[in-house]
Length: 251
Ligand code: URA
Image 1: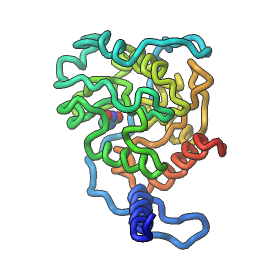
Image 2: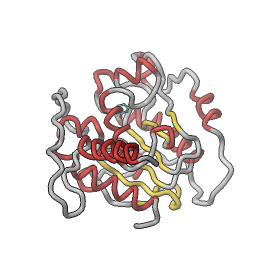
Image 3: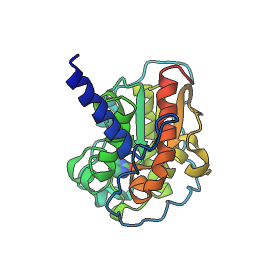
Image 4: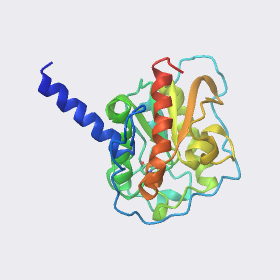
């Protein structure tokens, strides 16, 4: 590899690190302060869910499962909860069907609703940089949400919506069978871990996915929250480094 190309890659990598809020590498001096993000409309952190959704996947043993296409086909033009009436497109999920790393968000926003693709708006662009910061490409991972239809006004999904939709997420997880799932924010973390404990306490802690101990869950902050609270990017970076270390067999 030419020196110029190597330098270019190194500069690009440092840029990613700075963008997601890394200010130090090892013991070295600060790289830079995090790039300030234009302010995002405030939304209170979602409330803790009161009822955990049922986990559909019972057996921890590896087994032959249905395909993502079969799960998508069964969802059809879903009307299992009230969100169908205000959505434009159902957002199923996308990425590598055999990904070792999966990201789960709460539900589509306006851009995702308009396009039918997960995490493509501003939060999605930050998620892509977070993925690249740990040396994955977006197309290497699988990205999905707890609810597949946009909650109006970007509110958090309500418990009945989570209950109706999360079985499809559990089936997507069983089909992909990643090594690690990164849950983004409270609704995803609480739905997957079947807990009422909040993201601030759970972030960065490696947990077993309740339905399959062969899959680890590592919660971190939602990128939309990081856009509103850039000072939290440092903690998200610590969580992402844990994900990378685990997948490299270093944890
Ligand atoms: N926020 C989410 O939780 N999911 C998306 O797909 C986009 C924004």
